[in-house]
Image (cartoon, rainbow, N blue to C red):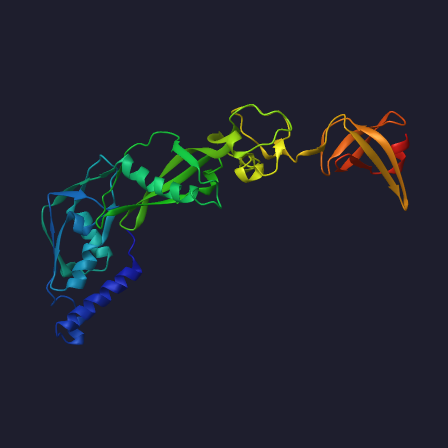
Amino acid sequence: MARPTIHVRRLAAVWLLAALALGMPRAAAQDPAPVAPVVVTLAAHAELGGLDVLVRDLGTVESPLPELTQRIADLRVAPRPARGFARTFERAEIERCLLDAGLPPDAFLLSGNTSVVARPITALIDTERVREVADGIAQALLTDDGRTTADVEWELDRPLLPAHVPPGRAGLELRGRVHPEWSTAASLTVDVEVVVDGAVERTIPVTYRLRHFATVLVPVRGVRRGETLSPTDVAERRIAVPAEASARLGYAALGDLDGKVAGRNLVAGRPLRIDELSDPAVVLRNDPVKLISRRGRVQVAIDGIALEDGALGARIRVQNLASHRAVEAVVQGPGLCVVPTAPEIVR
C-alpha cells in the first residue's frame, strides 16, 4: 500500500501538537515514544455498514488524545466486501495500515483477536419509499403549466424492485431529480439517488407512462349546420388527448359560443372544435344579392343568386344572372356581395 504523504504529514503534526499539549518539551515532543500509545483492540467479528472498511469497524481505538483517536479510527483499511460475502482481516494487514498512515511502530498497540471476520450488512429500501420520492418529483413537474397540462395521470412503466444498500454510519437518505434525456411528452423518468454517508451509493430510475387529458365541450344533441349554439346545447366532458401539446389545442370553450353557429353538422357526444363554429350567415343559399364591382370611381351593380351561405366577410360563390357564370364575392351585408376584381363579374 502506498504511503499517503499528505495524511502522514497531518498525523505527524497532530502527534506533535498533542505531545506539546501534554506539556512535553519540543525536543521530546518530536519523539512520540513518551506519549501513551494508541491501543487498537480488534474484535472477533465485525458488521460493516459503511461504504469502506475503517479501523473503527474492526475494533475499538483508545488514546489520551481525542483528535488522534478520531483520525486513527477513520483510517481506511480496505473497500467494503460485496453483499453476501465475508472477509477476514489479519492483524498484520491492520498494522500495515497504521504504519502507512505515518504512525511509528511504538506509537500504537494492537490487542484483542489476531484476525477479524467482517461481514457487510445492508438496509432494505422498500419500493414504497422510492415511489414516494419519485411521485413527489413527478407531481411537482407535471403541475407546472410551463412543462405540460396540469391534467395528467401517470403510472409506473415497470414494477420497482427492493434495493439492498449499506445503511451507512451516519444514515442514508433518498433524493430525486428528473432525468431529462429519458423524459418525453409521453413518459417521465425520475432518478432516485440513494445517498449513504453523503455519497451516492446507487441510482434507481423510476419511469412513468403519462396520459394527458383535456376538458372539452360536446353537443348534447345533433346540431344542424347554421343553428345557433347556446350553453344548454353542450356539456363538459373529460377526454384523453395525445401527448403532443399541439393536439390539445383547438377545442372550443363556453366563451367561444357567443354569437356563433354550427359551421357544419355536429354529432352529439363528439368533442367540439373551434373550427366547427362560424359567424351567423347574413346571406343564405339561393338568396338574391347585388353583385358590386368597383374600379376606381366606377361602380357596377349586377343581380345575382347566392350559391352558398355566407357570414359577414366570408367569400362565397354567386351566380351572375347576366352571364349565368359563377363568380367569387365577399359578403358585405344582407343581400350585398362585392366582387374583388372587375374581370370576374363579366366573364
